[in-house]
Image 1: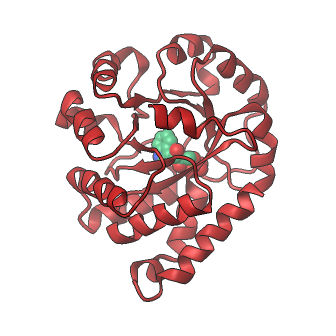
Image 2 (image 1 turned 180 degrees about the horizontal axis):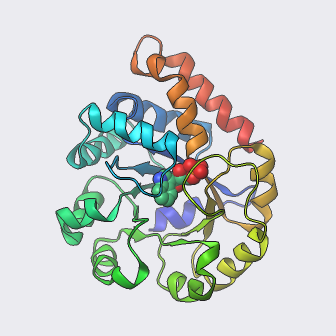
Length: 265
Ligand SMILES: O=P(O)(O)OC[C@@H](O)[C@@H](O)c1c[nH]c2ccccc12
């Protein structure tokens, strides 16, 4: 958790937290993408465990997750991928995003122990309500895995209760609905972020809908981190064939680095 705290301590801009689907377009390409993102300035990696029924995900991430599953990605495979990322020299903190079923099937304790042992730093379970997360919270604390809660503009009355027990950071959902690029963010976003920040003992990162540099700039003064998923996964999808081919991967990875540079500068 110290690694996460450090990742959010930068003062020049909010921490950049890109999201990748583990195993998409291939396991090898995911490792290369993670390294390219770190090189381009990513501070934390959010790594999604592909799931067959991703109810919080929009079409881009759904499609990528379905492709990863069809190509054989498994939960054990995701942990193995994490090990390979560390072996390849990835140093930034990695936070896994897994739906509740994936975690419960393995058992909370076993899941977070395995995550820690594989080199993971934190866990986000988007469909596990705060009220039902007690056991996972205890297991995560024992394993020194940060448990990152999500708060949405609709959780207004419950924000304080949810974030008090947050470790690592808090994920503030910028707009309602599913993941995906959006031009208009929630009209009360600033007030919402101020509320979350005031109540949170840990840094606050905002995600959902962000895909343009102007949006990142607009939210920057009000947050400690920005999360970008679908826009990046869309780029990966456009370059899928190149990324899957070791001979043609270099140029596609360069495009990913340019995308990050453009978002952050
Ligand atoms: O894709 P977007 O709109 O940039 O939002 C980030 C998001 O993709 C990532 O954090 C995420 C992927 N799957 C999720 C499921 C629930 C909550 C969050 C997520």
